[in-house]
Image 1 (tube, rainbow, N blue to C red):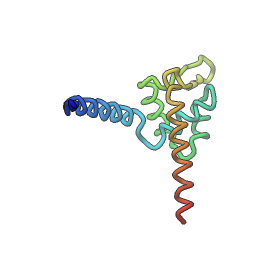
Image 2: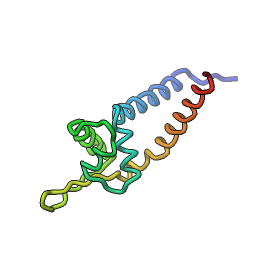
Image 3: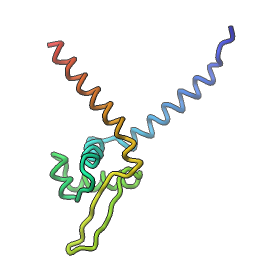
Image 4: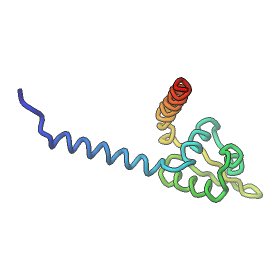
Length: 120
């Protein structure tokens, strides 16, 4: 029986770890999943609506996180010519691909909490 070369496994592992590292870099931080999840629930939201929904986030931090998410094509920003100017944010089609990941993380979190309560 012929063994698979270690090289192939190492390359696959490095590729996988690299992809995970990229994803974590884009999605890291305390607020990004909360912002993405909120925008997935509501179609479009204004900045102040997001401030109210994302409990505890400062305006400066929300602004930074929104810029990062927009730069990575996970949300879009639309400026509407009203007086005063209105800015709306919404999840992009590519951002919507995170829905199953968020669902699985939520499922894992619920199961984890339940396992902690069972230990007590």
